Image (tube, rainbow, N blue to C red; front, side, top):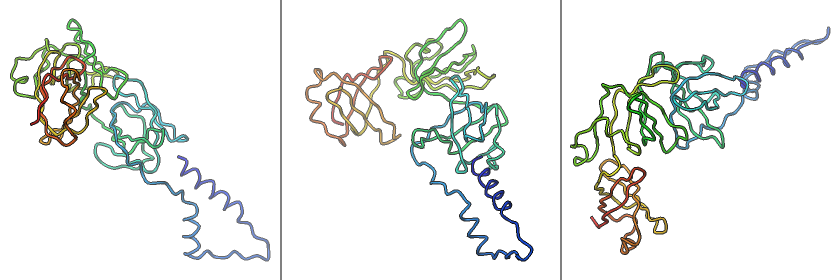
Length: 288
């Protein structure tokens, strides 16, 4: 890494200057001068970035110790560049190990954050066994004949593709009215919101063994919470549920709700909305 190579270079310069003439006697370094020289040679790193973190799972395919970067092949997506340095913590099956032991791995989980314009690895977790994964998003396509399921999320431009086995567990979760209805492969419709649990079955293949259906196009929901934002121009409001701290973004037609502008941030509201496959559309808005 850059830090190690700099120390070697400095050491080489010091050795090259250690020549004495016949009448010269070397001066023994004192502990204080040794500590001062070591402090001057150390590279002072800034604190680790403290922004919002994102965890990516995939394969570490390549490590460049000169540029301090690695190539992570995110499952179902393209390879991405992630930078690291001495601030990055490295773990193997939960045990912390020295960063110089970082090597390509079939299964890794990388906690990242933005360091300026770069994606920086806060921590890297190497797994020596096949991991389970979870992915939450909206179904972009499903082919019952092959069992191929494609899911997109709000943070990804590429869909995650999974294989749904015939015996995969498919259940509805959420509000009692929605969750009490019978579920099955018919709920895997385009636009449905789901959370899929899957196992890795190879470099670019995952098998979904359980799928939670959170919403399907045409389903109705009732939300209660505190109004955290409202955009009258866009016709959009956000509620935060105090019980589960979940936030819900709901669209509304301004012409259908002329009095909605009287609500202020912090007001408790109750909203009935239909999910149309892309968003929640309000059917009723009232003070709670």
